[in-house]
Amino acid sequence: MKTVAALAVLLALVPSCSSGPDLPPRELPPAGGQLDYQLGGAYQPDVPVKIVVRDRSKIIDGRRYNICYLNALQTQPGTMDGGLDWWRKNHDDLLVKKPNGEVAIDPEWAEGILDISTGDKRSRILEIQKKWIRDCKTSFYKGVEPDNLDSYTRAEGAFDLNATKEFMKSFVQYAHEQGLAVAQKNTAELGQAGKKEIGFDFAIAEDCQAHDECRSYQDAFGNDFFQIEYTDEGFRKSCADRGGRVSVIRRDRNVVPYGHDDYVYEVCPPTV
Image 1 (cartoon, helix red, strand yellow):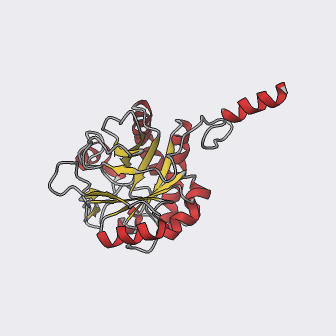
Image 2 (cartoon, one colour; image 1 turned 30 degrees about the vertical axis):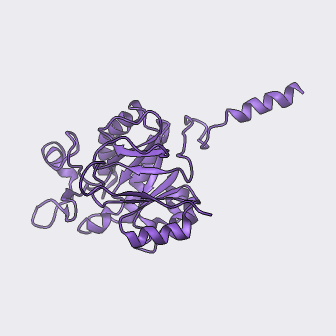
Image 3 (cartoon, rainbow, N blue to C red; image 1 turned 180 degrees about the vertical axis):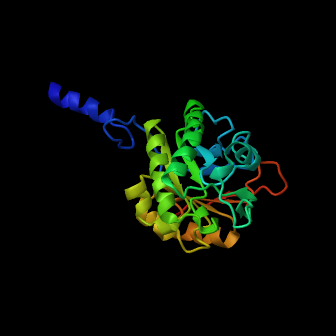
């Protein structure tokens, strides 16, 4: 009887996400838990919200599972150590350049593209971002959301998806060493490789309904993916297809804080 009791105690201590023999335990966000995506500014979420995503510069919500957003493959406006001017001043050779010498820019968000075309550059960029990852940990975030895994499509041919995979393998490994879970952000073209090769623990997908990509995330991560739709049509269809199993929210595209005129936040109606 003592052996059985001891085994029960050991099983209770098993971490919620399996880790390698030398890695600390890490916790995944609750599957299907209500998400609030607060990249445009922090605010008090609704009571049912279980998971909050905020920029790495923001304070966590101490009553919820918090995910730390950082821009892994592009410059990040609004940060002292990650904006385009900061990279130009301190690490100009780590920015993708056009043939005319100008920095390659994401036209939608006016962000420079980080150059991960070689092993040396990937290593140097990760060394910079290791501090950001550690900051997420010391700020008591439990997960990290590295954005713009699709930057290879805007990189003027400087690097491809394979370079992205190699960089993110090292990124994820380091985050796991800090005890942080890591989200695959968008990039449905990774298929099963995001989880099985890179090591992402869960996924966060924007407008996957509009791009007919939601099935890819669910095939790879089961119900451990969180969906943000920016259109009424995509939101309604997603709720009909997956509401009640997968966490789906409707947000305004600039994810502005509560109280802003453009603020939109909806959750799927209860399923019968």
